[in-house]
Length: 79
Image (tube, rainbow, N blue to C red; front, side, top):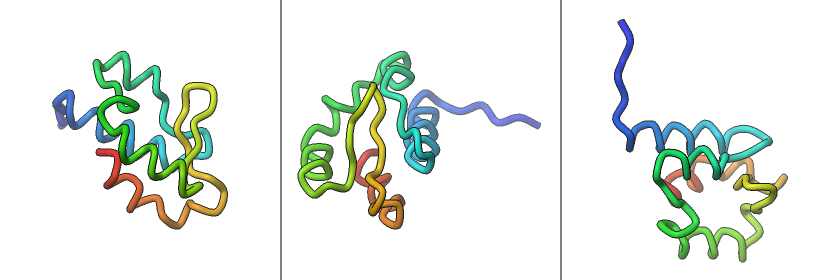
């Protein structure tokens, strides 16, 4: 049996799964779902960037090398 996910659940999956990879969260994929994470989570993203926890490169939000242990906490900030 397959599960049908809502748009919000798909967005959460993209964020959670993307952040757990080296490549990061695909911003174009989120935008195609009608979600502008850079706008919606601007304060959190700015704080995470200022604290060198995430970077944004080539349309991807990703954890810095030293921040992979904080993945779950970062996910909570972004969903």
